[in-house]
Image 1 (cartoon, rainbow, N blue to C red):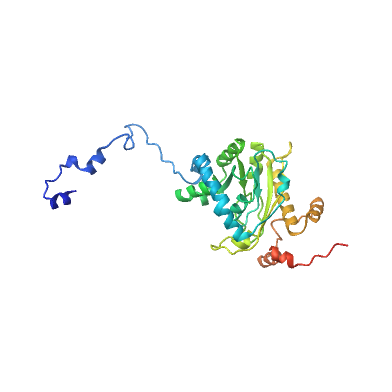
Image 2 (cartoon, one colour; image 1 turned 90 degrees about the vertical axis):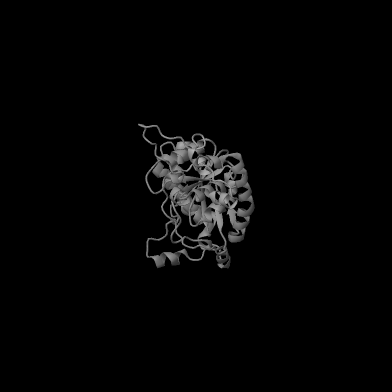
Length: 317
């Protein structure tokens, strides 16, 4: 302002009329109020991580935008990358309320795949439990995760029930939840032991658990890869599970993991053989063989749909 005044040959403004000084002299409500003397200053809460408030993403405008994203570009991207084969959706016919969908985890593609595969009316009334330290690390990623996939922060780096209690409260309010009980993506294509988060939320909210098995997303976008490689994937839904009266969280979590393992056996063979092995308690575990890395990779093999079509199947006479 002083330079402009000199160019126009105008007298300089008094210091009291300077716009900068005017802004600095503004008080409440234009600026934050000052703290009175003798009062301890309250610590500032970081609006990120487990403290991020996702209530705005559950309001109608955000839900409408998320529905357009899921049914539009997200569905097209999933179809182009994975061409998913969806099975077992008829097993959800008896499900009359909100539920907790628990699936194995191989890739970042798992969430878009399931958001476009879970049928109505749960698809647009579902929230995704996401790692607070990964998806809510900054304000930008927190806002995008909340808007695009309806994520809520779940703490996994420390033992705390604050986020779990919040998720249970949302489930009790009628929201369905999508969780990955393994706690993270598979490092080598095999599964990891299930944690008790889904079982705990089911017992606390009274909602059933729908086991889901995902196969093929590790080939498309495995952990450590930044660019996807198109392939095929499959999603297999299981029957809803309800915890028994005398069943604690540990036992119910083990039953959820066993059902997902049975769905994995069904996806790689057929329903009848998978049920026979499940009845005999001979279902292959999700975690794979306890051998060296090369043996685990060899045992994993090529499970793509194209490889299954090439394999000749003879009847068991």
